[in-house]
Image 1: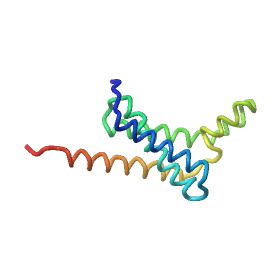
Image 2: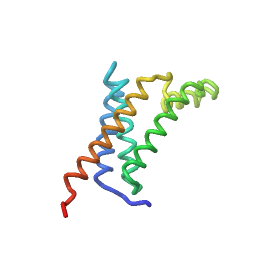
Image 3: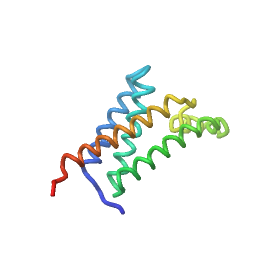
Image 4: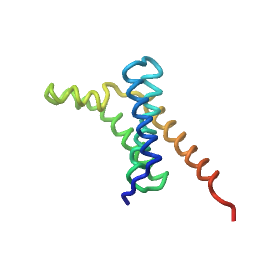
Length: 127
């Protein structure tokens, strides 16, 4: 069900700004691993901004997208397209498959679920 959530949208915007800064200025671990870690949290926050789904369903969906994009890097799809599209695909898909990226995506989703669980637990009222 579609339902706008301002808190998730603000989180999305903060993470988007952070990812842009990382892409522009960071190198090494911060760019390649921490950026991937934050990427799934960013996508999770974006989806939760507009769609009312359970935390677990959203997390599984986001992790599926992240894994799909990572495994698409094995196909070299970006090399099969005309040059005009290849650069865009390289930006979206990346250029090389990495098990480290899969680990970063998984840790990002686990962190998200833990935080969501802690927030829910904190605000639940005992009967």
